[in-house]
Length: 368
Ligand SMILES: Nc1ncnc2c1ncn2[C@@H]1O[C@H](COP(=O)(O)OP(=O)(O)OP(=O)(O)O)[C@@H](O)[C@H]1O
Ligand SMILES: [Mg+2]
Image: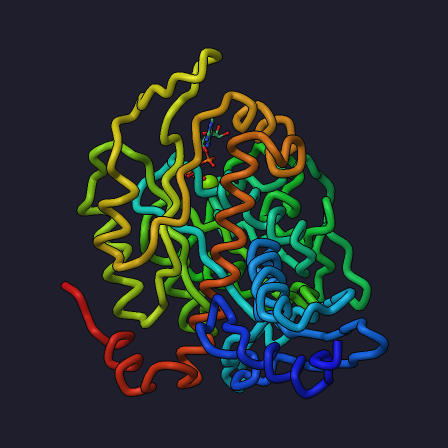
């Protein structure tokens, strides 16, 4: 009983290793508060990501560390501090902490599906999230999110984003009279429109802005990267022997622009029949291969689920409609991993556990 002193508890807690940063809480300064009163411990711990898995893991480690002291009760209060990207002086959206681009070399692999569901999963973790449909030729976010209408402007200068399921949304689809109408842009207009979508939209304070890119590699990502610091890219691919040349172009472009590739998502990985047997309709191994090429982790494999398509068409994304379905669950896990990776990336960049020199060298390496 007498061992439950504040200093003993503090010592035990400060030695707990943060699973993302792999350093003790004491060193990280993330044990924010501690009281020990009549056998009851209350503490407050900062987490760099809203991941529930991370929170559970830290909780487990706290309980294990305090077990020898036999506290009666341990209350942990959490504070999520999502780290922010560096912003340049003319950054168009300085109040947006992280910008995540969802891209692929090929069309139709599920970028918009992943971007939409990822944004929703991040929102469901309690973050403030925006979703920008940067596909100016074939916007799909309005249909996938089941929302139409035109955004308002309070001051005649900035555009208010649309809102759905707690997400802030912007798409060229909201600006068209007929959402099915074909959009024809000439080069400079395209750049102008994109710039407007970033700078002139009142995004406000966001932890993550997810950007759904059009098929292909080039233009849009390049334009965005020239305007602001991108946190990183998520590459979506299918499992078949992919046209690696296309993916390769995208990956090397990111490396050249020093945009980190956060991870790879394999979509349409298999179909599970009612007996539980998996059928790899589109082959296998694509995700692994792309991840290897991108030197980034494979974040998850999303099964083929007719509900994904149906709900995509009907405006109710799977993460919202059926969060505990196999596809919904994988997307939730991908979102959690992504938030941890983003936290780690910022930490490493700030010289946290790696010499900044080595990190710079890695980021600037150009692959041809
Ligand atoms: N895991 C899945 N299971 C079933 N259907 C899916 C799955 N992922 C995507 N789809 C469906 O496949 C189609 C293409 O997906 P999506 O529009 O997300 O691809 P995209 O890469 O954004 O395409 P584009 O290159 O045209 O922008 C959509 O109808 C979508 O609902
Ligand atoms: Mg798309």
